[in-house]
Image 1 (cartoon, rainbow, N blue to C red):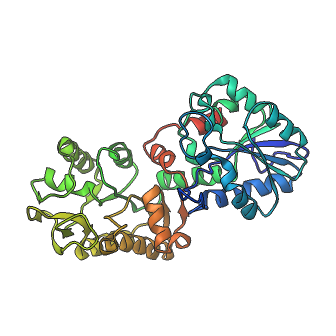
Image 2: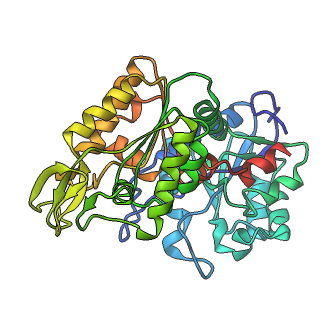
Image 3: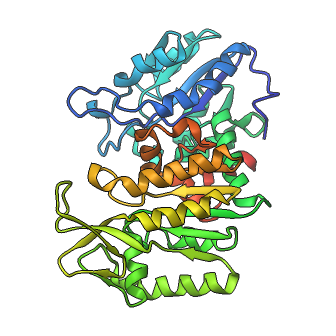
Length: 397
């Protein structure tokens, strides 16, 4: 494994796997969030400034049956040019004669984008021959796609085998690993994790892994109602996973045995329908009337969470506290974000990760006031679960 900081890119063509799977408007193909493109710029510019050229590989969308106009990287070329502040050339295929010719013509200091690697089923199948075709296009391999590090795909994992002495992490991948490890492995305390979202079932492994690493875990969002019902509370028609009631109790017991405090909401904003303009009430979370559902945390819960976070040195946030997409039910999520910002300003290290949490800090304008915002999504979740991600393992081996 090489280091991007010391590797000589002079006169070399670097194959860089990025994650430019950005959201597009269905009809106009306009990019609605270019965060992932901007995140890769430091790696791209470092290679170019060191005398190399960059061949970008990425996927976009989930094309099922070969080339698909809606998933073509043509739609994002202009934004890549704008963000990188240089002209970008394009190959209509990622392998074959056209790609080979485009790469052979690439001059040092230039950028080439290969068409969507997922136009070939061999990419997601982790096909070795396909990875070898890609590998022939460059002199070294840089993985800067943390968002796909949990996938053992050809361009994210298998390709590294063909660069035994010329493979490395990009700057984004390096930062992601460093910051998540800081949360998981730091000896500073107290350490608090905030785990929200809709379902216990999707966060069980994360919570169980965090029990050995955190002092406190705040549980919010829809998953909180499963914990409340498991303890005998009345939750009306709130979201619940009845198959996971015992699981919730098991988590509470494990936490108790480990001396980890599980902090649940004590009140909630309820609604008589799942709409922004529904009738609202604030009640104890264990006393929700029939026909009403909890959609946000109440003020007492927000004060409780703020007290915990204000005393924390390390903070991890994954998952919203309520249906923050509805303006009338975003208070809990907005307040948890503000509490994290306040704690960060007092010296705490804070990491926000997971699609909805990232969307929330961006929506409320707090992204620049927390310590680190992960671009990882699913990869970050699996890393938090303690899984050895194949994209990381392939570089380190």
